[in-house]
Length: 106
Image (cartoon, rainbow, N blue to C red; front, side, top):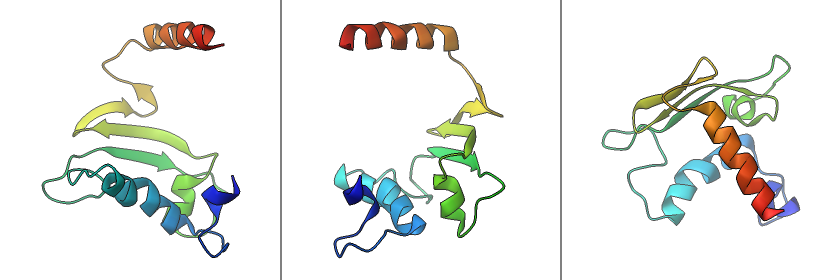
């Protein structure tokens, strides 16, 4: 866990650095120029997070806060979660399939 929260010099990573690593740097590692940032010509894969009231610091800190609540997700411009509700998929079937997979793995 230490490596995930500290830079090469051992200094703590800032929320902005962590968010960049999860978006732009991740896209670069995958050699994917169509993801990783909001820009013309890139896929509109978005996540909207409501930070907890006690969240402080830059906006990225609220986005990364462990108590943040995901309220909307769009994949390639299509809403998949809106107002915290799953759209266009059978949540019960997904939950059952995940439980089956977990049982097979354990």
